[in-house]
Amino acid sequence: MDILMQVGLRMKEIRQTRGLTQAALAEACGLSRGYVCEIEAGRRNISTATLGRILAALEVSPREFFALDAFADDQPGAESL
Image (cartoon, rainbow, N blue to C red):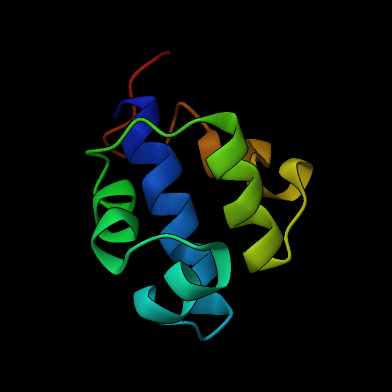
């Protein structure tokens, strides 16, 4: 699994845990719902500035977002980066 997909899936996981829709997250960080959808699907390579806005809207630190267990290479389908 590539890094874009891992970031997207992690973002989706946290968004759903927080009880947010894609539309609500998009509004909170000034993005379109379609853009959020494409990030979660691993089809968008976002800037660190955009990632920062998303993390702020999700109320999660970079450390929590990039937790080692969330990005472990031994997850099913994961490839070494």
